[in-house]
Image (cartoon, rainbow, N blue to C red; front, side):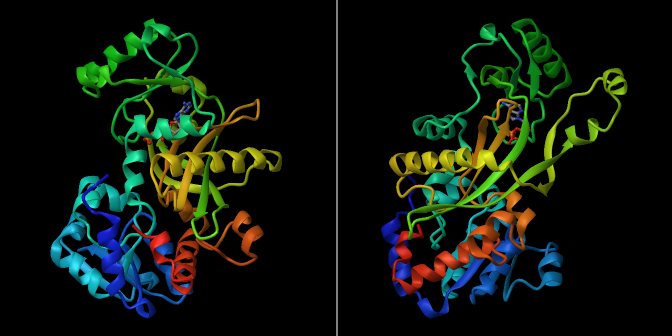
Length: 363
Ligand code: ADP
């Protein structure tokens, strides 16, 4: 657990004017629909924006206040934090916020009320912790190999750190593993220490669904809000090339997300979709109290046995929620009106204020 303790945040919250809350975030990732949703629910909005990156926010007009900083990471500077507290801000964390501010700064230095559970961010960032959450919950995940010598079927080999899949590869035997490791090292894509930390897992041959949920701590309920699939470079470009040409050029695909497609899943798979999220929410409550409050995402592959297998999670709003800024087929089923993830966050904050239970949704 970090230095920023909930009791301290609750003291700050005590001094806030609850009738005058501002919803704020860093200008990147999912900030457009976070702020648009906040406005739809009647909040003032603020954006912390890196100089030169204001254009989308000004064009779409989602922010009432701008805090312009030299670098994204300056969001943790004392003066910026003070400005945020002065406007009774609740900050919504997203992937870029955590990446730019730095996990340790979010845990130890960022003394501004945040939506959701700040302690769980580390659990999605570290592969072993993320795995523990899934294993404890009994969620179906790819089989993990402890040693390359055990490889007996196609595996995907991953390395630490978010690197957009650069250097990730597929192998089917210990020999192929060693050959590809040598080739990656020769290219300078891997160091010896990376090899020692190689994560080897079952290659799931299937279709990708990134499933976006919202866990309401106020109602103790998991909602399915939408789904996307990733549009990743260079892999999705490579597959447009005829197979013969793919073989001719020596390709090493990467998986850098460049965009998202909205998706719906076969209706008969929905029981699995709800069940896996309920399991994850339960294990998060036990392992990292108060749990997965707010938005989260399970990145899955569905094989031809119709098993939904989760290979990664986001314990905060995931970038794929941009695929349904105006609502999704699933959020329509629940709300009957356009409900983005950003708007759902704002709605939860609004309900928490009405019920005087803000400390249930803030850390
Ligand atoms: P990153 O470290 O960049 O987040 P991911 O773990 O998201 O990498 O994996 C990148 C891509 O590789 C995913 O979008 C998915 O399509 C594919 N992938 C990940 N794990 C597996 C697996 N076990 N089997 C098959 N494909 C996988």
